Length: 366
Ligand code: RB5
Image 1: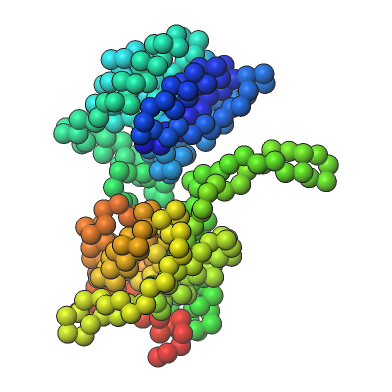
Image 2: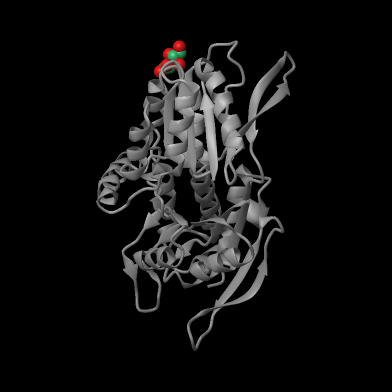
């Protein structure tokens, strides 16, 4: 289990003590997210947001936040949808916060607890599982509220569907729906929509601290951590989204998947699959502008997983409810991002109202 750990200056020494303790445990990877000194006073919200976003973005399974009292950290971290921070100063509260609340962040105060008690509280919190049952219903109410106030940043244990309601996205989608939009304009807009969606989707990518020398001085700065992204368009319509994403994430690796539908069985059949060698270490975005029955998207995701892909999201422009259900049923861990959720599929499997055949409209083949 990966646990993101952070403190302000007031709890720096407790953080060091607990990090050492965590690093002696097998099966736990403790990641120190700062601060790096107690010689300079800092602001606890900065650290709370760093650790909280790592947890909400699922880059760490749990978070540990320490400050003078633990109160500031819990207030700040709980502003992040998907963070359920429990402020605990005794073993029983820690145990119940896992049993009943499924807390994913623990906050404690270095000015309140001894090192030994803090270690005991942490151990119990880590060892206790969520009870599920009636508590699921209660937690769902909290998640529904988060979704109401921020539809694009809801976190859940299972894959979620996020519809981008941003006005720029909606405006551009209306133009590509129009049957009179030219191939050139259609192609440009699909790239722009894909870029806007990825800008929002990547807001929780983890950062590492680096040093940069400006023309004036050396300074601390941040860079994306680790192996970053792989994008995998499903041929051929998925190709229409690639450049819009690469403009924002130029170092992303690109894989390709080709599938056709067998005319007799109507099942998707693979005819091409070439993915980056380090696919298992990357966040993977499978691209397919139209999520209709979900057959090809689900098959493409299975292919990616069979070759080692672990963290997969599906990015489409228009989704039908049938496709969303199929992908969530076959891949409950996969998030679906779409610019619009349409009404239904017609008898030929086309999304209604949709925009027609995205491949034909992108490549002018009709
Ligand atoms: C810092 O002095 C202190 O305010 C902080 O560590 C924390 O206790 C806030 O809640």
